[in-house]
Length: 337
Image 1 (cartoon, rainbow, N blue to C red):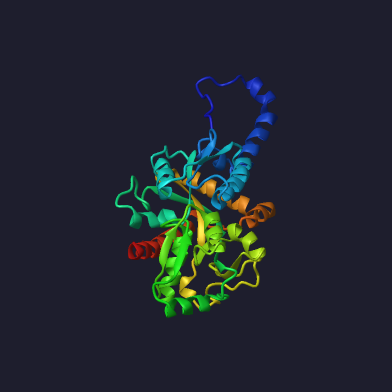
Image 2: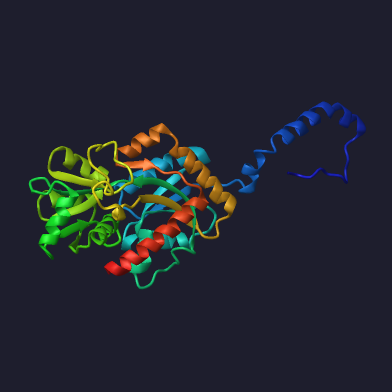
C-alpha cells in the first residue's frame, strides 16, 4: 500500500470535509486484508499469457486434458492460457524448455509418467528431473485398459498369463514407446506375473489398438479413451483396467488387482510443473486455480470423453506422489532397459 505523505499534510478544513470518506475507505481496506495478499503477494501475477508446454501431440488424450484445464485456468487467472505442443524425445524437449524458462509462473510444463521414467532411459538430460521443477498440481488420472484381439481365445488376464507361461518367448505387446504409460503398465504386469514378452513400440495410443485389432500385436495397454470404441464394436477385448477402481465406461471390466495381479496396479496421471525457483505464492495460486477447475462438473464430463478423471492434490501432496512414483519407475525402467 502507498504510504501517506507526512511531509505535506493537508489543511485541517479539507481533513474535516473528507473525514467520512477517509473513514469508510480505511474500514474497507481493513475488511479486505484477508483477501488482499492474493492480489499483491504475486505482484499482480499473472501479468500476461500463461503458456502450457505439452510434450504430447495435438489431439492426444493428455493434450485434450491440458486444453480443458487451460480454458478453466484462463478464466480463473484472467489471462489467456496458450497450449504449446512440443512433442519428441520422450517429453525431454518440452521439459527442458520449461526448466530453462523464467521462474515467473508464465511458462509451465504438462507432464506424464514418462517424465519420471526418463532419467533411467537417457544417459544424460539437460535438466534434473526432481530438482529443476516445482510440483504444482495433477490435472487428471487416466485408466489404461489391457486389450487383446477379439477374435482370439483369450478372454481374461489369467488366461493371457497362462498362455504366455505355456509358450515362453512367444508373447509380444505394443505400446506408445519406451517409457510411455502403456510400456510402464506392461512392465509392471510382466514383473507381477513372472513372464517376459517382446516389446513392439509404436507411435501412439490409436496405433496400439489398431495393431492389436488387426492381430499384428497380441496384447497391449492403451488409454481407455483410445480403445473404447474398438471395444464397443467388438474389435478388441478388454481384460483389465490399470486403475484402483473400475471405470464407469466399462463397469464389467475388472481392475488388474481384481484380475489377480495387484502388484501391476498403477495410477497413471498427467500434471503441471513450474520451473524450480518459481515463488511459492505463485505455485500455490496456480494449484488452487487448477483444483477449482477440477471440481467443475462440466470439466469432469469432458475428461470422461477421453477416459480420464479429475485429480486434486496440493503442491506438497503432488511432490510426494512424484517422488514415490519416481522410485518405482526408475527401478522398473532400469530393469527393462
